[in-house]
Amino acid sequence: MAWVAIGVASASAIIGGAVQHREAKKAAKKAREQQLEDATQARKAEVFAETEGAGIGQLGQISLEVDDDELDENVSTNLSI
Image (cartoon, rainbow, N blue to C red; front, side):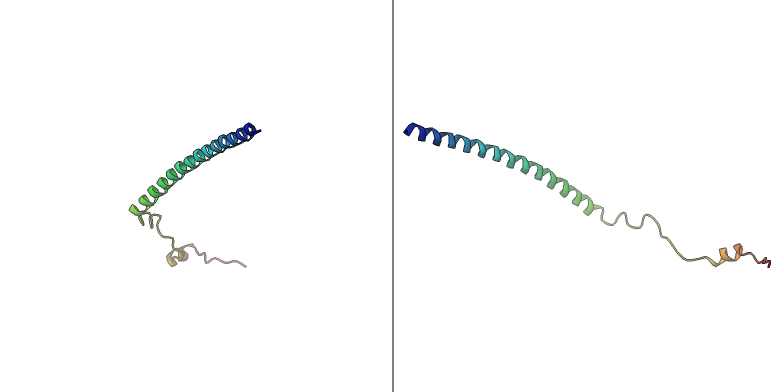
């Protein structure tokens, strides 16, 4: 009966080691993905810091004012009743 207990303990240790190895591989993969994402974010932040404010005002200004000269030219004074 002792050999059964030893077999169960050995199997448990082997399975535990395999599970631990698989989890370590998952953690390493996740760490690599996080490293790539961090590098991408750092590069975006660097580019933004170098060009901060460079794109502001490039589209022009929009005025909602009405030009009086154009109003006078387009008004027709002929009214018929």
